[in-house]
Image: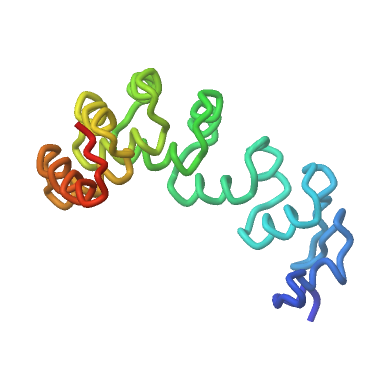
Length: 174
């Protein structure tokens, strides 16, 4: 039986022991991975995700995991590149798109000092930019604030609970 052995030894794939990083033979053909610019680890990842040399070249400069993730979530090549030009990783582009967040809306969040993950998680939770700013101004980091909102906390209740704990240590925030 030709092809790689799919187990790991000492954190190195057996592919690195038996295969050149340039060519992989199996299933009756040879792929010239040297055309992709990937190192041996990147080639192993691409093969593991079922990508072809052409996939890797067409989707460049995205990494194999990003290509796989985009294809899995039906993010087109053009759309992935459009989000990438805006500095948005594929993972966040997929999530932003899933909650209906546009690039323009994302820029409004960034203008207020929030990152991409903050923006799509807030949209998913139903929190507006103004609400997120209020939570941040009250001293809450956005991921924590969003979890509190999901758990049905109001900002006033969260501040009161936080302040009770801080009073024990003589550190009232107001």
